[in-house]
Image (cartoon, rainbow, N blue to C red; front, side):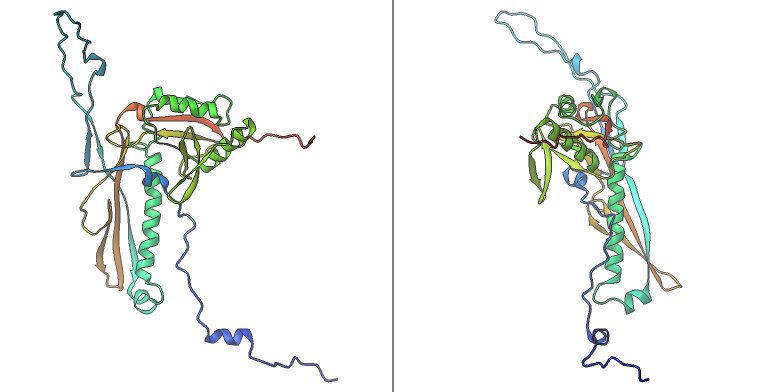
Length: 309
């Protein structure tokens, strides 16, 4: 019995693809985030990697008076400074990137292999930089909050009342809230429950929820532990005596502020090496420039009635 066979009437797709060029993307790195914090901070260049934060020793000892019309004696005063001000030293986030010269010679089209390797490594370094700005135990935001500037949530979930209390702590020209995206979602649910949906604002081409006109900036580097996280409120800028980022200018091989890429040579194994370093730190100029809301629950949801009139 003769077996039936499929008769090919035209060129197949699989064969035709052998003559076609696929459009190729650059490598996609899922860990890349917008890193809004680094965009919103005011950055100050430092010399020799040191930033000395001078402060007035006893601000309330500076005596002044409203002069009367008589010839009463005026107070005498002076402004004293701290004898041992804190010094901040830049922290380095570094790695050595290795690329085999055979790879960069043979497989360099349509995308430059060295360029893409450097781009992806630099993106990862910048992600780590944002994490350090928030979590570093010496200079990070969470470690720099004064005890008087710490408050806890009223009921666990982040409510408008909680954020109002934060604003009261950083009332001198506050800049923005910073928290995990899950906390922003939890705050949105509480606003919906109260019937006060927060307005939005457009920054850098993206939409952000706001409260009292201050944007809620998301960062997945703010830690979440046991279903709880934190919400920070910052005042930024040296002129405002706020929070400032620190970087070293004029580095050899500087690619962007504080970021250096240096070629280290080619080994006997034909591997080219590049030293990538990012130098940064952060300083809180006055205690009232930063406050934090602790114990923010992110898993609270509400049931609503399904009945309608």
